[in-house]
Each structure stands twice: as structure tokens, then as C-alpha cells.
Amino acid sequence: MRDCGRRCVYCGTYLDLENATLDHVFPLAKGGTHSPGNLVLACCRCNRLKADLLPGEFFIRFPWAGMNFMHYARTVHRALKRCARRAVSLAYAEAA
Ligand SMILES: [Zn+2]
Image (cartoon, rainbow, N blue to C red; front, side, top):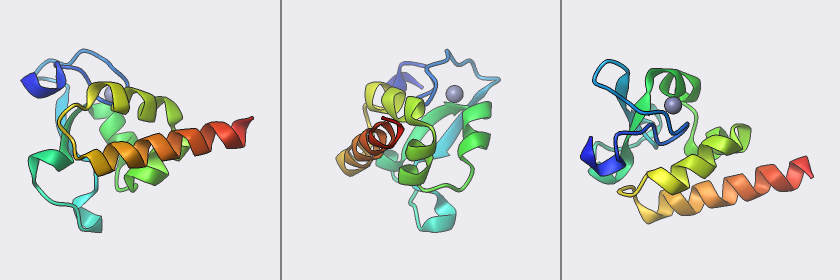
């Protein structure tokens, strides 16, 4: 909880124990691991929204989630942040 400032890393919503879930940034179903660098706090809604999408796919589809992720997810692997940054800039380039 402490690591992410008690906010959902995708939408920035404040979390309490009721709506907080642990999300594997790189989904277990796609070969992700249980290491702390792959785990973030997310609200139920974002967790459901993300489901088994790869982080790159998710952030291209929902660039706002990528922006929040770069801001709030302090403990994740740097590679995941790089991936988020790339996906967000791609999404905005396509929208422009
Ligand atoms: Zn959320």
C-alpha cells in the first residue's frame, strides 16, 4: 500500500482496503512474474479494464492510464515505465 501512495496507479483514485487490488502490470497469463517490480495497486475498475492486456496495449488504448502510471507507479521496473511512456506518446501521436 505505502509504495504507491494509496492511489490507483492507473486512474489516481484513492484506495481503501475494499476497492484496492494488486495488479500484475505484465499479466501472469502472458508470462509476467510476482516480483515487486511487476506489481502495482489498482482499483477494481481499472483492474477489470486492463484484464489481460499487455501494458503497451493497455496504455495505447487508455493513454490517461499511462500518464497516471508514470506518475504514481514508483516501484515498478524501469522497463515498464519506458514502455508506458512510448505507448502514451504513440497514442497521442495517433490522435493528433
Ligand atoms: Zn483505477
